[in-house]
Image (tube, rainbow, N blue to C red; front, side, top):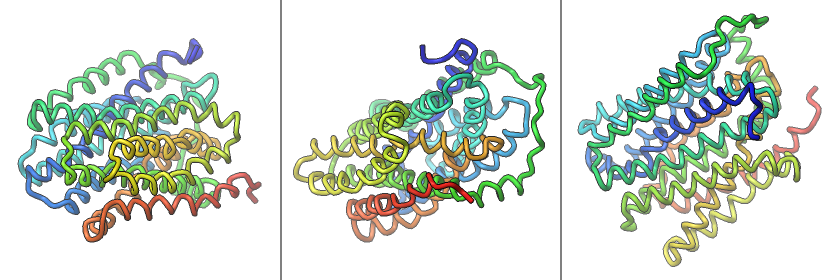
Length: 388
């Protein structure tokens, strides 16, 4: 049995919501080259727009996490999912750049609203294995994120960008069902200490272990985001269709979700440190193989690309579980840092990376990015030293 009896209902609905929410967050990457063509913008500008999406869906999560840790209501998970579903689904049909950006930002804010509280509630409703439950929750989000490109590419290719708004129905319906079926806890007795925002951020940002885990999360996010944003432009230039690009991203992210499911089991067998080392080091030689095969052996390069997704996301649940155990009183805020802030930092970096990739070449830029986690893997040993 996956869940204990008491935790089964809330965990299933929260994991399902994470799956659906992240379907929408995965919509834009494969179809952005075609949206850019529709509104007549260049790759660097499109990269900046996608970066804005990641900034608003990620960088604000620690702040929303602060309010989630203080409040006794479930409002964030409902309105967050509804906002993501509605605005992201309507965005591709926008013909003007200001409206496109506005809808993407509002949808991204919905995702930023949803994630911290849901991460905190997964821990709250856990009565058995916290690492296992967090692994399942993260895996469901990654699987949803992987399905997003496939669903959006299929809809865009066969129905058109202006018909994608019909996909909002799924998220709105699930949010309404969650309102009824996720247990309330506002009436529970609680010994909860009042949390001060400044003190919480100070405690988190001065903790050595959390700083290292944040760096690892940022580097893994950089690899995932760079591949997801830049390679669709490369494949479009190579003549691949919307659906082919979506299928490639689906494989990349789907295997990442499988990695998140398997990660806790491998952690027990090979140790936490080895999970980190494997995830951070292996991406570099795999990206080298991709660079050598994407023109001459495209089918092989697609397989390699999918394996990169598996390796890159292999340490994600371990990172989150370890981080939340360091300062458990700030679970939602820490969830916002690891799951959100890291992606927001990467989004800012991607604004520059997009210009560099256009000025030079996409694949060599990805090769350089893949080297950074491998070199930074030396930080892992400091996670297991006694903190003064």
